[in-house]
Length: 262
Length: 352
Image 1: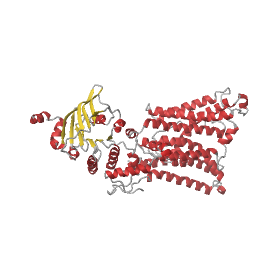
Image 2: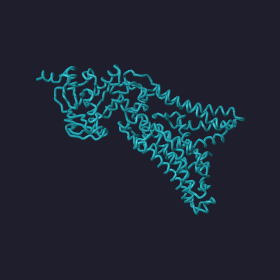
Image 3: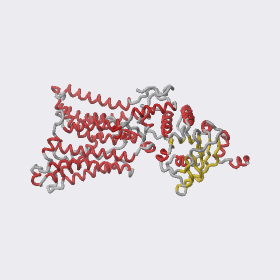
Image 4: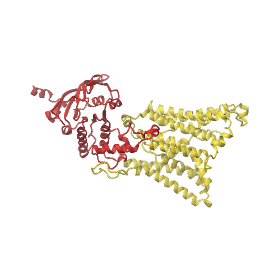
């Protein structure tokens, strides 16, 4: 990626707040994501990460703040609305139908119908869906023996790959991943991180939430740190260290770090 | 099967795939064939192996099959519909009441003459189907919009339909069987007619519907989403599947099938048996479960349900010809249900 020229953010959230009754989940969350980059959101438990991700994916509406796509303000009303804006989310529990085959899962909710009268009667174009699914998985270099095997026959990492492939197949611009490796073993995590690397190279803006610092430092280009509902820092990975990030995250030595910076 | 998707070595060799999904069908199909072969061999003069006998078996199976087809869709969504049997009864009773009311002057109707049969019968058919559909719509709406357990909702509708059916049928002065039998013309065509290949009309209709619903389940958007909703409702919702409206359609379809079965039952027997259908729901569910559809949702087939519907009838006919008490049919069918569910459990254990 060409890092020399400063680019405009594809997605920008400024001063996002969210209150649930008297509980303030987010007070001032600010974040930007860029095409062809991985932007990680990190934070301790209760920092507001999952609330923030739900706002970004359209599942809940913010109480305040500005949300910009390509510099234009938008209001996302539902996950469907977000999808219409090119934002796809890979949920932590993947939202796959295990008894359906791989191709049907990639097209879940967006099934392809046959052309003509048969299609209008509701007949599905399974051949087309399988071919596209094969193509999509090939692009991401996901090795699967067949796209017509049910998802329950796949390993956790392969399932994650299917969920990611579904997101990238439809979300050509922004893909949000909520703890993509949380449920995976070492080898499968590595495979998913490679996948993230690949979709980023396709020019997609990847937004990733993760608990794992080594993973964040392995794939993220930018790191946004949330603490108690606000963004305490946004920085490039190469400008910081794991120790600093953990310090900002926990607040353990924020003052101390700030002192040094001054 | 399809070729390897990528240049990478496949992470898993051709997975167990549908072996398990299909195997229950296959096993149960062999069980059915074995039963038929067994009874054919041991019956005196091979009386079991007879076209007339097979036609009667198909005829007796057809009605439960209609209920079981609707039930298959419901169970694939991980739901259950306990109301289909009494909804069948209610639909039949109301249809016969409508046909009697609209058929002509009461005196003529009472003596079996229906001057207005031409309008009364289509109206009766429509009423039966609409009542079934409405019952299903109520089931579906309560299950989805009010998030109530299907078991409880459909048990309630089971009881309501049962009571209403009783009320309508005993609304006459005599206190029971107040409704005269349907016109002979109706019974002789739809009920006992042999329209195609000399097969009972009911059998032809059930076979046709089984074929259509098999195609719907395996080839269309409606079928695919039925499996998706049963496999992961929340995930389907997040992926953009309209889960609520889909479930309402599925329950409405099951009710529609009960209404259709109600009118066909009425045509066959001239009047609807008030007591005779309270266990139909269990027979339908048994057919679905024996046929390999999982009560946990997400897997199932119409083909399996067809086979599952035949097994109890084949047993009953086989036992009758052998002079064995038909009560043994219940015992054997119960055992088969338990084995079928056991298979389902084992399959799920391997899956998850």
